[in-house]
Structure formats: C-alpha cells, structure tokens
Amino acid sequence: MTNLTSLLVANRGEIAVRIFRTARDLGLATVAVHSDPDADALHVRAADAAVRLPGAAPADTYLRGDLIIKAALAAGADAVHPGYGFLSENADFARQVQDSGLTWIGPPPEAIEAMASKTRAKDLMRAAGVPLLDPVDPATATPADLPLLLKAAAGGGGRGMRVVRDLDTLKEALHAASAEAASAFGDGEVFAEPYVERGRHVEVQILADAHGTVWALGTRDCSLQRRHQKVIEEAPAPGLPDTLRERLHTAAVAAARAVSYRGAGTVEFLVTADGRPYFLEMNTRLQVEHPVTEAVFGLDLVALQLRVAEGAALPPSPPEPTGHAVEARLYAEDPAQDWRPQTGVLHTLDIPGRVRVDTGFTGGDTVGVHYDPMLAKVVAHAPTRAEAVRTLAHALAGARIHGLTTNRELLVGSLRHPDFTAAQLDTGFYDRHLTTLTETAPDAGTAALAAALAEAAPAPDAPLAARLGGWRNLRSQPQTRRYTTAGTEYDVQYHPVDHPGVRVLAAERHLVTLEVDGIRRMFHVKRNSNNTEVYVDSPLGSHTLTPVPRFPDPQDRTEPGSLLAPMPGTVVRVAEGLTPGTTVTAGQPLLWLEAMKMEHRILAPASGTLTALHAVTGQQVEFGALLAVVQEEPLS
Image (cartoon, rainbow, N blue to C red; front, side, top):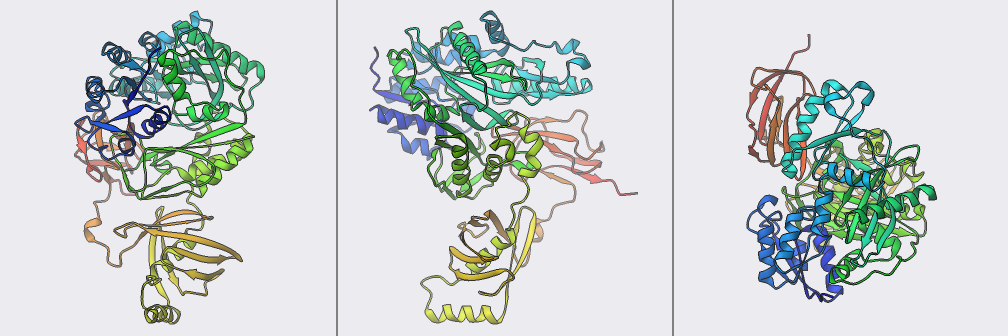
C-alpha cells in the first residue's frame, strides 16, 4: 500500500476544482499548476499551493509534461492526477510521472497506449469479442457505403470528425479531417466507418483495481451532442432492455480486462435504432460526465481513483444504483451562431436549486480564448427521470448568468422538449431541433421596459424631493430608452404606471415588479460596470440588452461585405485558390479559424467577388480583425 500525502492536479478549471474538493476531504495537500492567463483562476485559489507554467497556449503550459513533473517535485507532491483532456491519455507522460517516483492516478501506461489509437483499439476489442462496426476503406468506398463517418485515430472530443454523404466531397473531407487531427493531436491518421443515422451514444463507466476486480457502474446516455461533443448526459441510459444493458456491461468489462485496466475509465458504444450495440472507443481517464454516475451509485469516483492508486482493493461488487441523474454542460457559446465561443468577463454566475454545480469560475472571472468555453456542469439527481429532468430545467431557467452569451436557453429548451422528456434520444437531436431551440426568447419588449424603469429609478439614497420629482416628470412626459437584443431593437416609451397590458407595481434600480396580463412578475435588473449591457432575469426568461447610444459613433461602421474575426484565434486554413478577384458564392467556406479548442468556418456573406484578403494561414488575429471583403453582385 502507498500512503499519499499531497496531490498535484495537472489540469485546470472545473475538473481541477472538483478533484481538489475530494483531496481535501481525504486529508491530502493540494497543488495547482497554472498558465499566465490562469494566474488568478478558481482552481488556483482552491489549492494549497500553485506553480506557474510560463506562457498562455496549452502547448506551452498544460501540455508540458516536463514542467508539470518538475512542479510536482518542487512542491513536494507525491502523486499526479491528470483530470481529463490535456495529458490525461498520454502514455509517455504517465510513464514519466512514474519514473520520477510519483504516483500516477490513472490506468497503466500500457493500457493507455493500447487504447490511444482507435484503429488499434478496435483490433483489440475484436479479439476480445466486443461488437464492432466494420471499417470502410475510403479509397474503395461506393455510394452503398454512404453515409460515412471520418474519425481521427488519435484523440477525441469531436476533433477530426466529418460526416460524408456524397462521394464527391470525400476527398476534401478526408483532407480537412486529417489536417484538424494533426493540428489537435499531432497525428493525422483518419479512418472511416458507417455513419449510423439516429443512433444513440451509450457508455459504461468502469472501475478496476489491481486485484482483479472490475466494476461496471451502469450506463449513461450522451446522445445530445453538438459537433460530436456532448451537451446533456444522464444515468442510467433510459429505455434500454435489460438484455441490452447486460450485454453492454459484459462488453465493457471484457474491454477492461483485455488491457489489464486499473482505475476509472469509460467504454463508449453506438446503439442503433433497432438496439444493436457497437464499440466506439475506450476513454482511459475520468469522464466529464462522471457526476451522474456518482449521483446514482452514491460514490466519489475521484476518491476511489486515489484509493486504487494507493493499492486498495475494491469490494467484490458495487453498491446498488438508486434514482436518475441528468447533467447539462453550460458553455459560454452562442448556439445560434454556429456554436461560436464567447470570451470576456463573467459578471454573475448564480445557479439556484437542489443541483450540483461543478465550475471553474465565479462572478468577476474572465473567460479567455485559450481553453474550452465550458463554464459549469449542472447535475440533478431524483428518484425518477422525470423529476431529475424537471429539477435541472428549473434550476437552469432560474440561473443568473451575466456578461457572456451562453447555451443556457438551449439547455432549458432541450430538457423540456417533448422528444427529450419522452426519452426519444439520438445523436441527430440538434440537427432536427436547433432552429426552434435557438429562436429569440419571447417577451424581450417587457424585459426592455423593466430595464428602462430600473434605469429611471432614482438611487435609494437620493433625496426624497428628487425621487418624487423624478416620478412626477415621468408621469407628465413619457421617456424613451432604446435597447438591442438578439439583433432586434426596442424603443421603449414608458410611464411609471399605465402600459398596455402592464401595471408597474414597483420600480427600483435592481428590481422591477410588473403585473403582466394580470400576472405579477419580478424582474431582476443588473448593469455591468461600464453600463454597456443590461441583464434582465425573470420567470419569462433572461435577456441581455445593449443600450443604444443617442448618437452612434460613425467609426463603428465597416465596409459592406467585410468579414471580421468573430473571436481571437489562429487562421488554420484558407480556401484553396482563394485570392482577390475570386468569385465566391453565399455560404462558401473561405477561411477556417481555430479558437478555444474548436474550428470555426468563416463563410462568404453573399455571392460576389473577393476584393480583399488579409488573412494568411498561421496568422494570429484579434477579435474584430478584418479578414476579407466580399463585394456582393448587384441584383439583375
């Protein structure tokens, strides 16, 4: 048995904070590492000690195994937990940790290595009797093989994946997937397999010790995905027949035994509409969605990882599961704008209710450009699936999240969608429903009225005469405020009382009470520090309003057809043959920009001629930088 005393987490954000929480409960000292942008991040503030990794980009910081091991030794840590992402599935790093005399909180390097390549992993699983989809050779693919899914052999998280429905696009898709895989994982190998329409993504959590015990800790459904990355997960996977559930458990245990696994891991499957399971991959680390399994089984998987690493034996069988758990990933992104990640100051993050919130942020923190835009994981556990889903939706609907566009409304809409509540789940959910789920929230006009009334309300410490005089002026002379939200502008003319269908019951700087169509509602109003945005939260929804200046700045105007960088990032590709004078069509991809671990296409806004091209491959660009200009063809 090894007796651990101090743990370094080779990661950042919510997973580092979550691991530190368990480490403290077990009496372990904690050590954080941080890049320069993360110097004051929550995970740094949560640790007993912290070591700087000079630089900002992951390649210079959280992916530098040598610096992390040096930090662990310098800080007196005797163990390293990799979290997920970054170096968590890097066999060489695991070996280096062990060779340095430190305890590795993860599976043996040989198991990581065996599962690192999806193509080699499939060969192992085939030998172990785990069901697999037959691979397709892209060079000999025929129309009968379509649709195809191209996947990077190394890595995951949706990088290097493409769906091909037309053989004419196969060559370009292979090139794009390989380029993205090489950029993300240093390995451009891509393979192809049949793409299963309306399949379900179902996985099994496993936990194994060094004494021969392997637990299969139930199933999780992770079918709701965007860009092949999970958005909502739940345990157990609903609606699976007992025979299928048992088959998945048996296959997951066989996969773990095939590589002499130890610690926590996940075996992922694709389940077809007619109930046939196929092995996808094995993640040799803790999963983002592990909290739903913890909730259902009443376990702390990080604590068990640590005990297994110390040499402890697991009981012969796990505890019995109870109830149902659902997790939603709250991202700083705009689903209506191709899931565009957001950066800036997170002024408020307040999620009420009987839910678990794992986060790496607090109000006032900055969401930067270098890392994944996930703000938090929100988890609800209840006796039934319906109760868990309802609890989670209610907590998210009542959350106050100010400063950044998020996917919160999408999550609430997804959890309340009839297909989801009926457990009609598959990976095409957002392909079918994204448009309706990202429609502008209703009642923005009422939110604008509340914002205007709050703005006009005198400060609480203003003299009584000023407060009374202000209200008298408002009654006799209607005031006007203008706001924009989601591309719509609202002109609000208001009195302190008397509005069509609305009665003003009270109006203060931060709280306005209105009776809307006979129903009393409270509107919480908050402004950011420089008064450039107003946040209005109520049972009718949440709105971010931008006050419109009375005299717009003429410098805000840009040349028609200008393509501006939607975020800071790196230009990773320019369309082949694209030069000034090239004719382009509306919606044609012109540039590819990489930011916050995702690749974003910059599309031609209209059909016409490219008159300017300022972007080059490898160029770092700031938010709002002019990338290109397209002169629209005049209508004939």
